[in-house]
Structure formats: structure tokens, C-alpha cells
Image 1 (cartoon, rainbow, N blue to C red):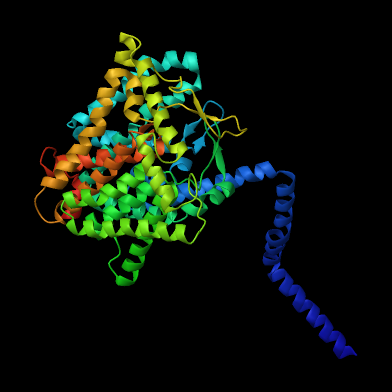
Image 2 (cartoon, one colour; image 1 turned 30 degrees about the vertical axis):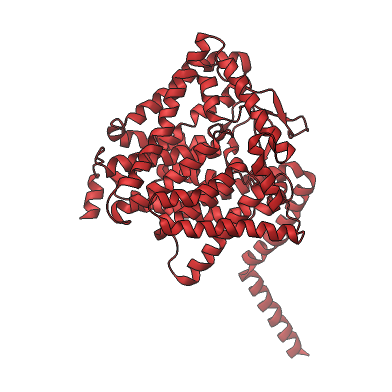
Length: 527
């Protein structure tokens, strides 16, 4: 009996000592495993809207952190701030451009704020070189004139609508960002590696994200959103740039092969994904512009010397047509942007370019655009003052409302779906000439570089391939801007302006028109 008592007391003492030794672990288990889950559950049930707000911020934080961490890991934060915004705009497009901080009328987009902060640190480090680039000064004047002439008066008349519309002018900071980041990277001797990493991420992530196009409505339904000018915009699920990304990915496969994995077990599966992405995004988008882009892509690549690409891309076009024929024959139901994806639907959509044939909605859209252009130009030509300086910002250039809005009230179509007409109407001849210089000079510079630069493909950091890729990207945006508000849409305009700035600096450096001296620390690394 006494032995049992001793054993019992000894066991009790051992358990007590174990409990004391593990008190911290037991306490943490109870707190983290029981108490906190109970409190979180109570909070979620009693405060659902707050929970949604927190989840939204978490998603946004993850997106921003991922973009910032992935792009050019050895670059300073102000370079990564600019380049990560371009990556975010390229992949998440409309959803990324509507991510805002602030409240009420004091909101600012995360994208433009990041680029502004980056330029505050970049411009002092690069101004000695940038001042030798005429386009830099043209950009400064183009940004200043509409703000000085219109902004104050238009805000008095139209309120925040004026601020919203003048963002198409503010977006020229992306061009300045492209100039500054390229010059700074060259001065540090790291630009080629930074550029290659950005383009690789852009292409790979664009292809993967574009494959989600068929389920994009479900992604938007589940995604957190931000309150924009007229409606709440989901962060995830917009495919505004998906077909563009698929086109530049195909172009990069031939012009920039060094960006892609060279091992067979990675290379060939990726090219299958690349072609599948192109077929999906073009078919689902049901856009006349995309049809034209993909038909022109083989010819453009062949023109710049990539003749092998002609046969390969033409095979892709044939596969697209054959695939749509199979879908129609077997009655496979695939929802598109406008109607079901079939070969007949694609042909009908293409025929609407005449404004008389094809599906009724598409033909009506062509004629409607002509009405919008004439209406906008009529406002612009109303007086000598508007001819020189435009009608300003804040008033809608059309009287059309598209379906949408948080309460089904419709969303005003503020621009006439032609960026040249918009720039001329809002800013007049003065702004239009400045804007056209910024848009067209880099395009023609890159085209000259891609066509006339001698040497092998790997010379000057694969310059010829990058120039070709840049021309294709800028060319398809210029083509689309004739019937869509490309330069009034920040998520697309940002990509054009950044690549334009990059292409212009590289052309001037390669042709000897601009010297970018290496900084002392870069010279030491090279030695």
C-alpha cells in the first residue's frame, strides 16, 4: 500500500514538473488553437464587412509584395517600385490600375503613387543624361500644359470628373519612368539583367494568367474590389491585356529566345502553353483588333528578319481556325466576350468592320464610333480657343452609357474610342502635337533599330530582338487605339509609355546618339 502511494506521488510530481516545464507551450496552444479561433469566428460573424475589408487588404498586400519582390531583385527599391507597377499593370491590368489608397475625393492610385515616389529618387540621379533627350522635355511640357490651362477651371465646373479625365495626361509619368529606369540601369551596368527579368516575368505570368480567361467571370466574382470612379472594380479576373500579352509572348519566342528555358523538359511544355494561351485569348476576346494583330504578326516578324517565325505563326493561325471549326461542328459550348465561341461567330465579328455586315451589335458599334468621333471633333472645332487648347477635362465626349455600375445605373462612356481624337479634343492642337511626338518617335526609333542595326542577335544585350519586340508591342497598341481608348486606359497606356521610354533610350545608346557614363561603383564591379 505504501509503495503504491509513493509511486502515485512520484507520478504526480513528475506530471507537475512536466506541466511547469511545458507551461508556455500549453498556453500558446490554448491561445492560438482555441481562444484566438473563437474570437476570430465571433468577429467574422458579427463584423462581416470589416472582415471583407481586411481580406481585401491582405490580397492587395500579397499582390503588391509579390510584384515588388519578384522584379529585379538586386535593384534599389525606387527602381523596383516603377518596374513592379509595370508588371502589375501588364498582368492584372484594369484591376491593378484601380487599386487606390485614401478615402473620398482624396484617393490616389497605388500605381501612379509608386511611380511618383520612384521618380523622386530616380530623376536627381539621371537628370544629367535625361536632359540630353528631347523627348524628356517634350514630356514635361505635355504634362504641364493641360494642367496649367484646364485643371483649375475644369475642377470648378466638373469636380472630380476633371481629375479623373486628366489622368490620361498624368499617365505620361510612365514614359518618364521608362526613360529614367533605363538610364539608371545603364549607368549601374545592370540594365540588361533588369530588363530581361522584367520581360521574362511579364511573358511567363501573362501566359499563365491568360489561360484563366474562360473562368475570369468566376474569378472576378470571388475577388476583392476597390471603389473606382463609377463602380467597384475587382482586383483579379480582368483580362483586358490577355490577348496583347499572348501576342508579345509569341513575338518574344522568336525575337528573344534567350528569355525562355532552354531545357527540353521545360521548353516544349511552355511553347504548348504559349500557343494554347494565344488560341484561348484570341477566341474568347472576340475582338476585331486582336484578329488583325494575329494575322499581321507573322508578316511583321518576317519583315524584321525572323522568317522562320512566319511559318510557325501561320500554323498557329490555321490551328485557331481549325479549332474553332471543330468546336462548331461538335456543338461545344464555350462562352466568349460577346457570344459563344465558334468559327461562324469569328467570321461574323470580322465582317462587322464594314459597318453593314456581320453580327448586328458589332456593326452598330462601328457606326457608333464614327458618331462619337464626329461629335468629339465638333466640340473641338467650336472656336479658335478649343482648336488650340481643346475642350478640357471633366465633360464626357460622348452621351453613351454602357451596362454596369454598382446599382445598374450604367457607366458613362467618356471617350470616343479613338485616342488620337480624344487627345486632340481634350488638349487641342498644342497637346496633341506634344503627345504624338512622345507616342510616335520611340516607335519609329525602335523600328529603325530593329531593321538596320548590324551585328548578331546577342550584340548590345540582344538589342535587335528587344527592339523588334518593342515595335510589335507599340504597334499593336497604336492599331488598337484607333478604335479603343487605349491611351485613356492606365493599365494599357502605362505599358506603352514605359516600353517607349525604354526603346528610345536603348536606340539612342546603340546608335551613339546618347552616352550614359558608368557610375564609379559600376566601373569597379566591371573591373
